[in-house]
Image (cartoon, rainbow, N blue to C red):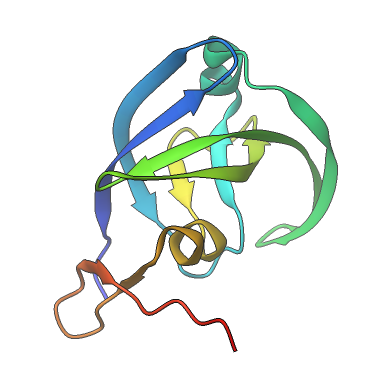
Length: 117
């Protein structure tokens, strides 16, 4: 599947700050990753640290909380803070929370079913 880039807004609801940018969907990632410079610009609150498996092995990342907006849908999101990655990577938890999935035929974002069973 080709790379899927989408328009995203990241917001700090407490400060009223936001940034609009292009983000890469990473269906191999559980959580969304945001470069530290964006977290600092928006003054997103750090809520702890999280150990995660990466291609380089296990690493510890700061974790922050903010609002993600994709295609007009908004949700609070836990995001990992990266000092190395310079683009926003949207993980599967954010996609599922917002009710989206990647269509494997078209490679585009589409509405997904949300289940409550």
